[in-house]
Image 1 (cartoon, rainbow over the protein chains, first blue to last red):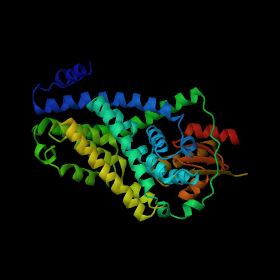
Image 2 (spheres, one colour):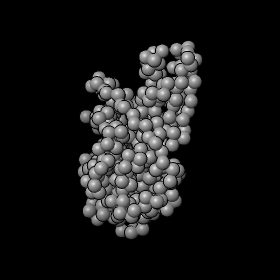
Image 3 (cartoon, rainbow over the protein chains, first blue to last red):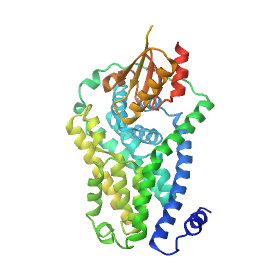
Image 4 (cartoon, rainbow over the protein chains, first blue to last red):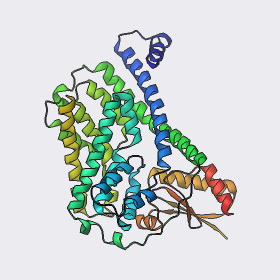
Length: 316
Length: 81
């Protein structure tokens, strides 16, 4: 139905000739933008309802006192619906550590929260299908759990800035929400987030559409295909400092993969972009020392790279 | 008594948006209030806040993790004064 709408708009209303690169680009742009926007609004709404039940204050209580393993799994899973803006990383970190949540479990949450987000999941679902969306969520969880366990085992408590352990926290009482509050919150979130990322999506799809219409199909096979073993680590290395949202990137990813970039490489790049960023590292530096920060970044670099290789083999 | 309103956040776009909403709500209601941006992560955490932006009126944290709308801030202000 959506394809018919895009065809109707492209060929009948805009009067473009079927088969030309311009018509192909325009048709692709219309189809993708409508599909992605609708799916995004729906998924953000559903996740926002879940979110009203899982506040960081509650997560803190649920993971405090858990042992390694179980604690990491719980923290990573709870990290999925929790929204994350890199400026929350520090208060979140202090809040966890102060309530006695072990460092490794704190990191499992801190990794999962930005790495697995509903905007990326919704867009992967719309543009690549449920299998790739599932691969993204599951591998994100595995990375957050394992990286957290490793960081916990390294016993780096001394690499946290001393003042963190000295802060006295005020325990906040949270206001009870009614279902009306929850639905209202979800409606606003859905509207705000969709409108906020829409420009990025449209720019991303626009750039994608140009490549789609004009670049030859095997354009990237040699540079970013699965036979180039260096493609994955280089993509991750470029992606880690980059600060972008998944919204603008996934449409470009869709086109790059259609032009020969291997799927695992594209996923690894996306994870590097959304999972870690330079601004986030600079902010985290306020609470953790350089050594721990470097270990944290290195573990994520290795994790994303291995994930890329794994799915280049599995999906190739 | 002058009302004290604090906006907690380390200075990202969301926090500034909330600050702007607060100022707009204060102006609309025509009250005098002391609006302060709290950007120190230690102070934010010590207030029990783990997710920003957050909003406190007269020391009570009323919302966390979202950009409270002007309309809602007006309602919150009406509750305390």
